Length: 269
Image 1 (cartoon, helix red, strand yellow):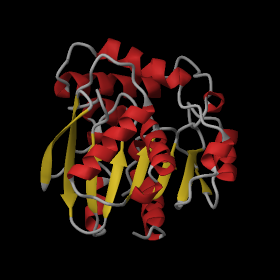
Image 2 (tube, helix red, strand yellow):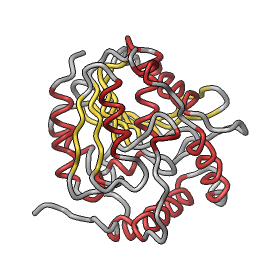
Image 3 (tube, helix red, strand yellow):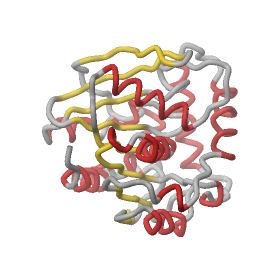
């Protein structure tokens, strides 16, 4: 029976399913931060990059599927998120992209595709622009590449509230600064209000396979922005997921996972 959690009540109460035992787990010291990572399964590598305010455990529905498909999965907690630390500087997507590259270097991972969700998607496209030789493809889900791509959030919004409640709970459990969630959320929000800010010309330099994935009911990203990205990135495909929102990997994981699997089939290393 296919799981549906469209209202995120299960996610608020329990979180995503626990991750399996990692084959490798550790930290990379990079640019005044300790960046947590873990590796699961074996086979061709794929890196999963979570969304803002979340952590790698939010991929609990995706990791088992990828292990079963013969993949080696690399999870990374973004700077200041989950188990990873940060310094006093403002958040930037470019700095978090550099953290991902540091983890790849530590694992001697020369090239890999990236599956990015929300802020993680932005980090993925930045890496495709900055270090194209290292990126085999980008699955870009639910993110903008300039400030004009975002929507005004409609309040009240119980789904977003439930997601934020779970993020706050997880932050308290995982972070080295467990009582600072409000300040953390404000710092990430400041970044999101002003970044990223790339032009269509910037995006034309991307030459790996790219899939732009937009949910029918995304609370944050304009549908026409997803179309604009697909038109601006050479060879990019646009996929619309019906009946879900910004939280599709949690709401209907079977639907989301099928699209991820199809993307990975077109990637070459």
